[in-house]
Structure formats: C-alpha cells, structure tokens
Length: 144
Ligand code: HEM
Image 1 (cartoon, protein in one colour):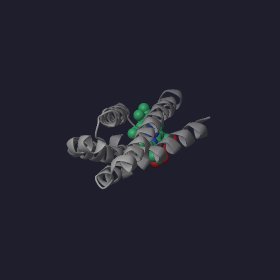
Image 2 (tube, helix red, strand yellow):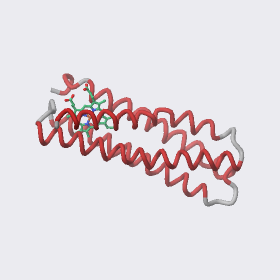
Image 3 (cartoon, rainbow, N blue to C red):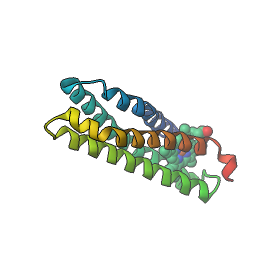
Image 4 (cartoon, helix red, strand yellow):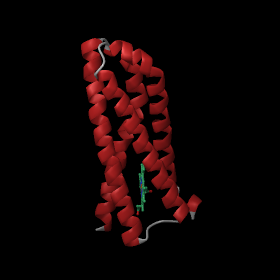
C-alpha cells in the first residue's frame, strides 16, 4: 500500500508541476484578443480546478504516509509542507476567482489589462512555492 501512496503523491506532484508554466501562460494572455483570450482563460480555469484536485491528493497521500507509516523526518517538515500546500491552494483560488470575474465583464481585454500585474505576481509566487515544496520534500535530511 505504501508504494501506491508514494505513486499517487508523485503523480499529483507532477501534475502540480505543470503550474510552473502558469506565469508564462499568463504573460502570453496579453498578446491575445477577445475570442482567443476567452479560450485561454477557460483553459487556465480548468487547470486551476485540476490543480486543486492534485493538492487534495497530495495532502491525502502525504498524510497517509505520515500517519499510517510514520514516514517523516520531523514535525517541522510536516508543518512546513502542509502550510505551503495550503498557501498554494489559496493562491490558485485567488487566481481562478479573478479569472472568473474577468470572464463576466463586458470587455475581457480591458479586464485583463487591469488584472494582469496582480495575476503575474500571484502566478510567480505560486511558481516559487512549488519549487520550495519540492525542495523540502526531496531534502528530508535538512529537517531531521
Ligand atoms: C505542494 C506540496 C507537495 C509537493 C509538491 C510534494 C512532492 C513530493 C515529492 C516529489 C516527493 C518524492 C520525494 C522523494 O522520494 O525523494 C514527496 C515525498 C513525500 N511527501 Fe510530499 N509533497 C507535497 C506535500 C506533502 C505533504 C503536505 C505531506 C504530508 C503531510 C507530504 C508527505 C510526503 C512523504 C511522507 C513523502 C515520502 C515518500 C517516500 O517514502 O519517499 N508531502 N513529496
């Protein structure tokens, strides 16, 4: 069963890793006009939904390994990774909320211009946090 939890955990991490492309995708929105822009925003919204599923699976599989098998170097490691996971979830939530609001405005292009600076910051922070989470996960000895 442990092998399955590790498998699930790493697959979810790989999926979450696709969000490393988010800042670049958001940057490319600026070059799109109405219809293509709407399609891209919809695609990002799908991704953020599946990103949330990946985070839930990461939490459940990680929690399963920690609780069921005591596989963790320290409580600091568990706490840090859990906090980062929650913050990534929150950031994705804010990004998708902004995108949904943008979709319901009259001019998506104008709404994008207003929201682009914040979306860029949010997606870069998400990018950095994913890297930090993987660093914490793969350097257990630093936290024992
Ligand atoms: C954004 C959040 C997370 C990411 C991207 C992530 C990613 C990873 C990756 C890539 C590994 C494989 C590392 C290796 O085998 O060297 C791993 C291992 C592990 N993770 Fe996470 N993880 C996250 C959150 C969590 C959380 C919240 C927990 C527990 C509460 C957790 C528990 C574990 C455990 C116990 C292992 C060890 C598996 C083994 O036996 O090798 N992870 N994680």
